[in-house]
View 1 (cartoon, rainbow, N blue to C red):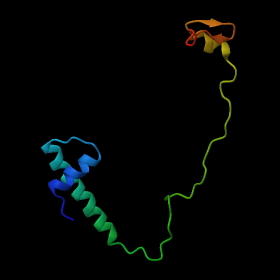
View 2 (view 1 turned 120 degrees about the vertical axis):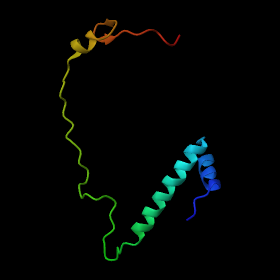
View 3 (view 1 turned 30 degrees about the vertical axis):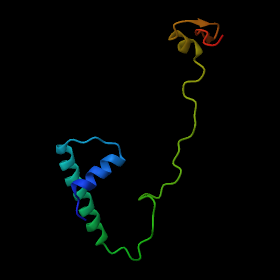
View 4 (view 1 turned 120 degrees about the horizontal axis):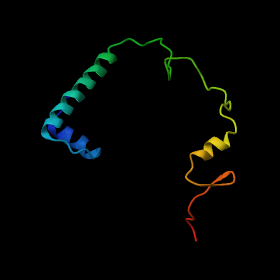
Length: 95
C-alpha cells in the first residue's frame, strides 16, 4: 500500500492530531513499517493452528481479597486536618 501525504492528512484529521511536516514524514515512515510487517506476518502458514485470544492459558488469575490493614482508624484519622469522633470533618458543601 502506498502511503501518501493525503492519507496521512486524512488519518491525522480523523484522530484530531495536528502534525508538523516533519511529524507527517515520520508518521508516513512508521505507518509504512507497520504495514510491511503485517505483510510479512501474512506470509506465515497458520493452517491447523488453534485460534487463541491470549498466548497464556491462565484464566481469572485474581488474588484472594484479604484485609491486610484492618481497622486502624486512629492512624487514618491522624492524617486528617480535622476529625470529629471517628469521622473526617469536612466543610459543608450543600445548604
